[in-house]
Length: 322
Ligand code: 6CS
Image (cartoon, rainbow, N blue to C red):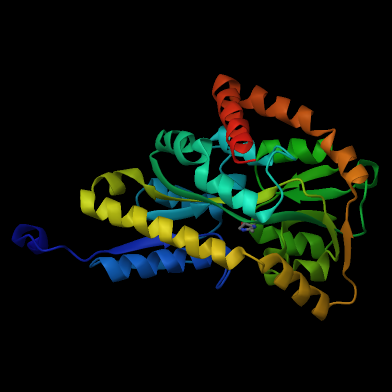
């Protein structure tokens, strides 16, 4: 109060929650965002990591309620709120190599404009979408074809489209929040899951699901946003500073993930002799790729005209960078 009356900036503590642990990709992003904000304003950022405030759905609820100012929630958990966010789970839609993926996130209209409107409809100011790593499947034995997935329960993040993907791949999808995954693998309630290599390493998933399968069917994508009422209440200068902090954190995070998968795989191989690595051949991949159109159709059934337009834009953006 006093600050605003006297014209001085008021120092607030902004609360920011994400879905990962100390040093993981979302934590790197959050810490860089915090560093920028604290260097360039009076404000402080308090970062909450996985488990401090609950699961992904809990931190989203707290952000929509205005208890948190910022949240990082991955589209894998946003399907119920924003069905279009499931677009990232249409297999073999995303590019596979690092440089193309980065270019796509930097330049895509679908990512940087269309999604902003979709999140705004839910009271959220989308500040950045960014990639974390190529998706790799882990299972209780090496898998090279859809028929070898038969009878295997594969954990998915909790969005219905990802279930359709694993059904199309021949498996039995089992949606679970993150907190239940390690235990479910350990007790053989599920026989596999998918995640980027850095997470398979940092969460120790290879200890309980040692067969790594590179299918090249997608990239783990995440999204950072603010409660929109809070964001709209900031001055124009503060909004600009928050956007700059988001852009800078993006650049720093991309630098962090460059080569991260290789480094994480080395660590995994050094600490386990049980782990196997299967890289699907083009012919083997084609057997999975063939099943992508049915998932694309399910995406359109779930999202209607809006989803079709977004998908068209997504594909146009991909074409433009290729
Ligand atoms: O599989 C999951 O649920 C988690 N995976 C990553 C890479 N980040 C957070 C998410 O909860």
